[in-house]
Length: 88
Image (cartoon, rainbow, N blue to C red; front, side):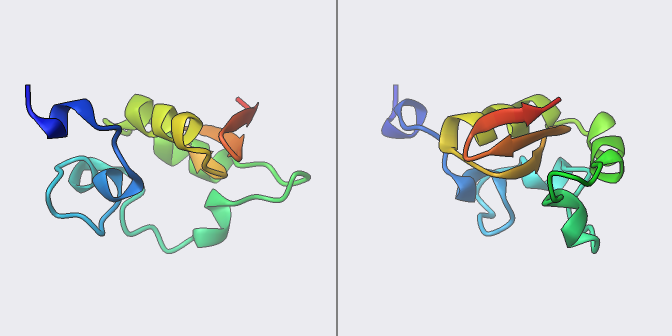
């Protein structure tokens, strides 16, 4: 087992700032210009982001990453606030 297999994935492993992982290349939201949709206000729906996430091949990994690393916004079709699932 290598050190890479033992370490916790980082945001760089999931997002485009890292070319070392293949995750991001398959993300349905990659390059989406509607940035506000991924960080909705509590009174806003997130149907747009949820619809894009619905068919994403890395949806499960994305949501797990958000919960594990304390992310906020829409990840994997769910809304998180500092890693806590707040809307499904």
